[in-house]
Image (cartoon, rainbow, N blue to C red; front, side, top):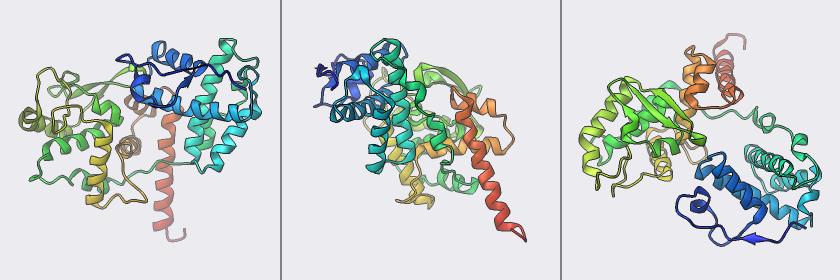
Length: 325
């Protein structure tokens, strides 16, 4: 079975793995070394590392159940784990995420000569698993209703309106928006500097509606939230601290429900606005490579799914309005 050597997840300040690691369970040493590699060598963010850790611990459990020594792991062991995930009711996209994490881990182990076979080359690309699962996208009118949902008399109207406008105007991930600083935004020329996955920087234009909403928030509301000049984050909570991504998720969901574009069965999230940003740009004639750059995708294949979303919409329109569908 796998090596029983485990070490508690360390707790020095600044390590994303430490901030998001399970508080009770210890992480096996071979997994811990890989997570440290991702943090130090690859510069992955805390949320990403936390997801990798969870997926790999689940895989480690399967190896222990099957009494498999790590150096002898086979494709059959990986398949058994993925089948177990399916039997637990995980979605195709979740299983594909697990498969991707395992594939990268096995590739690392083979490069480090910790396993005997290059099992990763036998694992099918997760993209094939999720290609037919199209992201939910709101129509233009629904986006307008969502952006108009915050009421002017509400306490956090200016902040919340600026957040919604910026999510749709830039297509940023929720974690990117949460950690955006004042210095990263230049309203005069209408651009912001965004740090994405792996601390990769990209420049994103800001439309006039988002610029106006941001300017009003910065002039009127943010000064009321600031408790210390040392805090340079753009969006602040009631206490003048980081408005974390879970709070932003709840914020978007609240206004989506109010606007009538979200439900318990089909919720709207910050990522929905990212999908809308990409799909609406492509539908308007934007170049795929430009949209890839704006989203911060490494592989253009990841961006291509939004062209399929638009094709699905065209098919729906055709079948609905054509006299002989």
